[in-house]
Image (cartoon, rainbow, N blue to C red):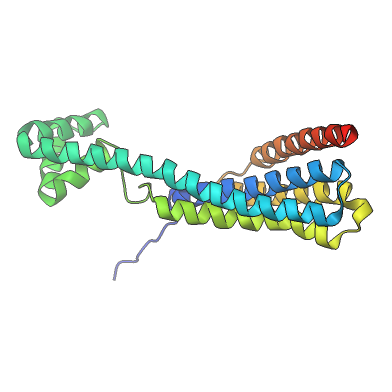
Length: 231
């Protein structure tokens, strides 16, 4: 009996992974930055928590809406390409068959064999063959707006909850140091996880996430301190 070989590829997760990583990273950074800015303006713990919770709610909804609109545009473009390909297959099937043959020839297949492969692929599912080999579309990478919106919003809320938890648990006088410390540690873990999930084995994703996030928090804290001084 032949053995079944199951492989797991990073592209299988590309639809939700990008949205989840982006949402979590944005949730951690934006909420921590907001907390740092408000705290630097000499606000009390209650004011900081209110600002943080409002930032979590607004950010999660914004991320969901933004992802849905963005990925829906991608889905619309994919649908338009498939509709055009469907019309072309109906209007001139011979030209489309030769087009598919040329694609296989360009990939190194002998012309006669390429023609045979194109004929067999067309007989099985012509639209699927052209979608995959001409347009580069597949079920693994297809745009899924609802999935992206939910993943992004949930990840944002989860990420934003971390700095809020620090505000609740840490001593008030230590917030200015505790929030960025916890945030950068969480971002380093997030960068490592996303690198592992995507198949990347280097330290570059971790450094990239931590560096730019630290810069964002420092800038927000500086602005908050400036306005707090003026007030």
